[in-house]
Length: 122
Image (tube, rainbow, N blue to C red; front, side, top):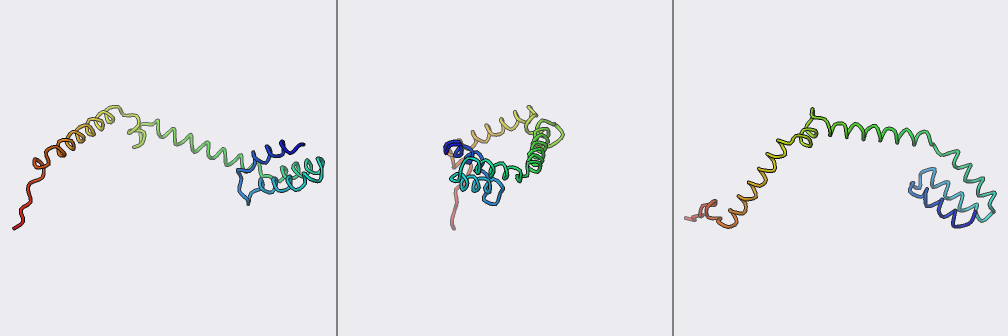
């Protein structure tokens, strides 16, 4: 195993925090690389055995299930988000309302006295 391959391996795992098993794997492989290829391979495989793969996969499954639920809610018409995203009439009404508000604001800027009465002080 040359230094380039070790660098690629450590870069792939380095996204994990210093309190994680990945950090221990990187540290062990960097330290033992100088001692020889066999020591490095032994250290890497030993550390890989300690990584809690099942726990990580369970977390990924949970995230995927939550994401599926959120996207299901977004495509459904029985909740606020789903209605906002999927109701064409509501979209058209909101679009018309923003156009009307925009035109009123433009007119207020052009003719402020039309909308704001003059202020009289005593």
